[in-house]
Image (tube, rainbow, N blue to C red; front, side, top):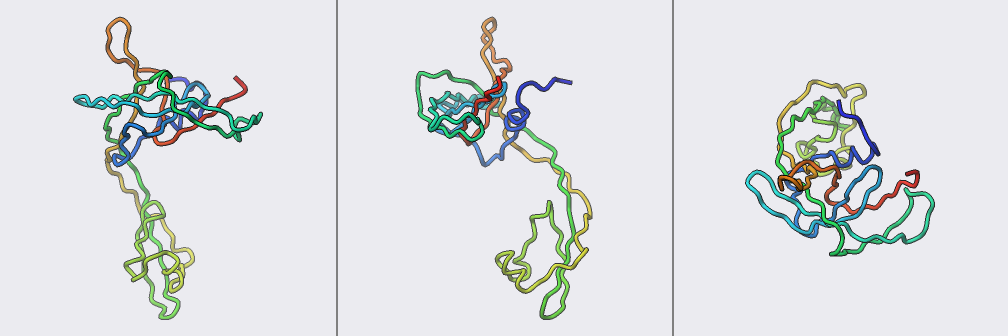
Length: 197
């Protein structure tokens, strides 16, 4: 078992997988995660390979808007700098097993007393249009929840494709790509400095 190093928050954020609809492009904001710190960056180049894409992410400059001793509340201003270091990440399609709970929930019509039952996944998939309503609010004007009817009825297990980013560096001896140590969060630019280190 590998040992957790640095910030748990960083390890959780960088270890995520992304929807296949969220492919990055040149100019996409990014955050490079280190041991405990996070640094703003931008995607500057994408090389398409046979089984993956090689994403080049360049660190951005940052300036504190106000000097706050509390790192969490510090506000930052970001600016591109084409002279800053560039990090590489493999963008690869992976298949993950997803497990989702299914529930049954019942509602009663306030006027007619009619009861309807919905099956939902992960507590947010009720299709209110089945009863002619466009929104949850519109549905709840006519229907009331039956107390005690929210029950877990099963689990759906399926495989889905996601995008994963792995840090890589070029080996000095073989010139091949090997696993690196920095992480990346795609789609957002963030600076965080842990003042305890």
